[in-house]
Length: 234
Picture 1 (cartoon, helix red, strand yellow):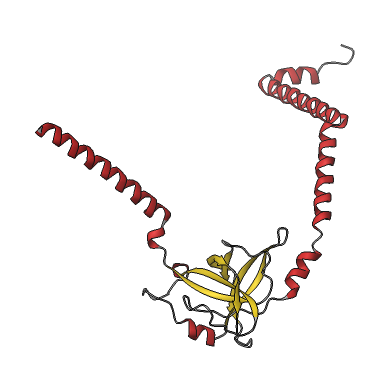
Picture 2 (cartoon, rainbow, N blue to C red; picture 1 turned 90 degrees about the vertical axis):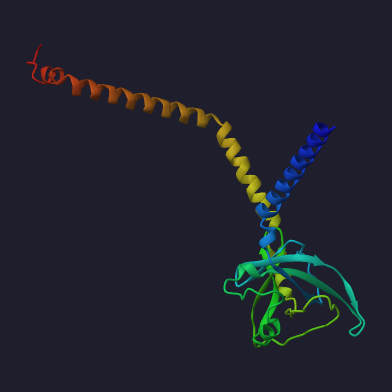
């Protein structure tokens, strides 16, 4: 009984150690343990077509986070439907940020002109992203509807974004690509390619023959001299 109990204890210990090892690999390997992110909310009063969860949040071209969720909410005060966008900002991406818990002094950043705006991420697919920068001359519009996260101001959606995407000749680009691929296929399958391949083979064989002849003459210079000094008529 004692020997059986010892085997059971050892087996349970081994299984537990293996589980802990796998958990450590998953946590440390993904870096989730060291990632510190803060959530903020922004409100848009127009269409955010092209913006989706997972889209990057950038500051002056550098990614600092991503879009977490996008939803709809009715604002009783303005009698309109707003679009709250919740973002995750990773403070570890910003060097020099004090190592402390909680949110940074975002109110001071807002006073200095921190604003968010939608920008085009991919012209072909029409995907959007959220970009932060300082616009001290732009007014701040806050809604204060969602209290779970600090609110950051967003600039009004510019209709130019959607006009630019609508002006992109997607069909023409697709047709041009299709014609290019068809032309390549015709060229590859044409008889001209066979003739070109044959010519290249002949050039290669001639070059190889010249190289062999040069090697032979280099090893037997007397053959070259004999042919060069041979009297006329012989």
